[in-house]
Amino acid sequence: MSNWFPKWRPYEGSIDARPVGTNEYLPPAQSVVLGVQHAFAMFGATVLAPFLMGFDPNLAILMSGICTILFFLMTGGRVPSYLGSSFAFIGVVIAATGYAASGTGAPNTNLALALAAGGIMACGILYAIFGFIVMATGTKWIEKLMPPVVTGAVVMIIGLNLAPVTVKGVAGNNFNMWMSLVTVMCMGSIAVFTKGLLQRLLLLIGLLLAYLIYYIVSNVMGHGTPINFAPIQQADWFGIPTFHSPVFDANAMLIIAPIALILVAENLGHIKAVGAMTGENLDPHIGKAFVADGLATTLSGGVGAPGMTTYGENIGVMAVTRVYSTIIFVFAGVFAVFLGLSPKFGAIIHTIPTAILTGASIVVFGLITIAGAKIWIENKVDFSKNKNLMVAAVTIILGTGDFALQFGSFNLGGIGTATFAALILNWFFSLGDKS
Image (cartoon, rainbow, N blue to C red; front, side, top):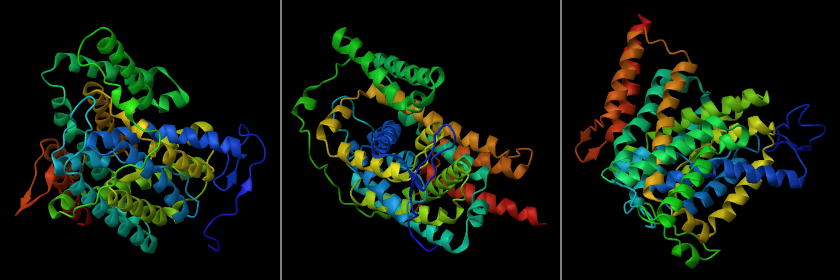
């Protein structure tokens, strides 16, 4: 490949006639609007993920913008992707730090954030190493190491492992439990009864709708704990988020680093999906995309922000708009950076009540769990084979039951133990395939 960046050319014709290719660009005004739309598509998830882990949402949004631009530069502007906070980290960060969200109006800061940051950096470095190996050898070994039966089971336990922690947040408070269910209904209704971009923004729109209902029921009608808006008025419009230095604790790194395997599988699936949509062969860029995502995760962890991943929401937006121009994502990244530099925006996020957060978590963790089953279904995993049955069955119970192996002072955590169990069992039981 002679040039790192493609030679972009202006798009000619009608979008109804043909899609906008990755190496084409639209007029500036259209590009800006489409970029802002991509930023909003990732908005719900990228704000929710750090909030559930006790990270600063402002810093997460800021780093998502910076990391998206970094990804664009490192992949030579050839892979259309937005990087945002990865949900894959939620379970392991909670396991490594013992964090639980502290409720309405509270700063919701994870006191062990530095430990999580060190683990996220370790994960990012491991992820980048995988990328360099893929650049040298191709992707076949990943598909062999992590067939769909393994990937599906591991994705599933990320959601299931979090279920008890999620429900515990509102247990014993009848009002909060009902408001959590109202939040679930809001998000579910947006997902089922709407179409297009509105449906893609189900987390964000559902959250706003539930927030409005909570405000009416608590602040207006006097039930439950009212939302405190004072911090929003006191917050500045512009300011730099607080950065946090990582602490490299072997135990936390051992729990969090294996998530690199999930990010590899996730990113691989996303790039294959985008390649299928655009009709372009993006396989030669997979290694570069892994390295870029890995370094972005390392950089993000280095300042105390969540790990990064490519976003399915943005793939959905591309499918709806039929615009695959990579330049759009530069505008999306710049917009996210501006959002991240507004403390007033962060103050608004911190007013989200625990009940709504729990309802959103039920939806998100449920969707993660079902995404694992979806991997099995789409790849037609054959559960009449005892090997597949055993790998999936053992992995799910180890992860859901939080079966955490201890090695001296190292605690692998339920998700870590189940992930390694899935890889080892699949390899061991595959020995029988060769006979």
